[in-house]
Image 1 (cartoon, rainbow, N blue to C red):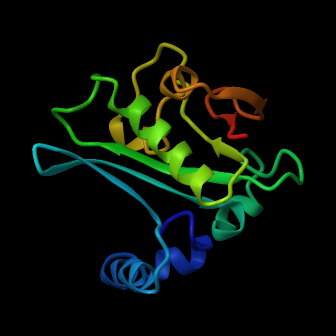
Image 2: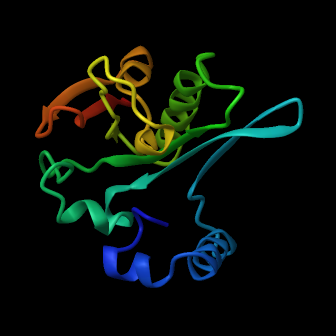
Length: 156
């Protein structure tokens, strides 16, 4: 729910309130993302949707809109420990692109972390790593921060 709420609203609902918000979102018919399974166990998650679903980015100096083109955003990419560094992120991004395209998106935009050769704690790369996006076919379109580029994939 982090990207789907403004900071004050998110912080006020941390924990059970935000869990309930996500449950209500899913029950409303909105698909907030995709889960990936290996041997029947969930091991990865991508959260994505139309830019307007993510008000937090609207006021971000680093992640604000590059232009007025209609885009879908990837706002979270998670791979469970024990399954990382196996190319799952790349496959998950490709699945997300396919899902976005099937739902009318023409551009998929992401906000990966580019650690520039420095190790980052897993919690700080919750939008995914730059190299995975590049391997999935995304191209950098803006960089307002040394470690947080904006990348896009054309879906047409």
